[in-house]
Amino acid sequence: MASKFTNGQLLFAIIFLGAFVVSMFFIYRKDLKQTRGTYKGVYRMFIYIGLVLAFYWILLKIIG
Image (cartoon, rainbow, N blue to C red):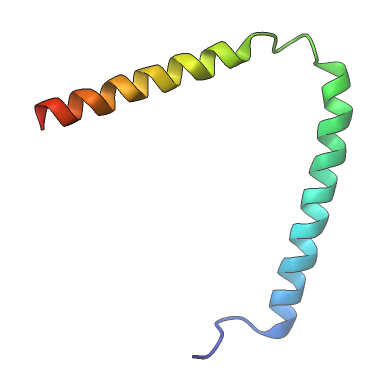
């Protein structure tokens, strides 16, 4: 099966992805120092969203 991309396109995608991940890592580390207190307790929101989705899934299983 032939590849849909040329070797140059694949090389560019790999280099771009690597540079993007590395830059996002450093930006995240820098931003973490500035916003440490801003998102205190955000884990509770993830728990609430998970509970709502679980309730919805269970409700669909019971009704459907």
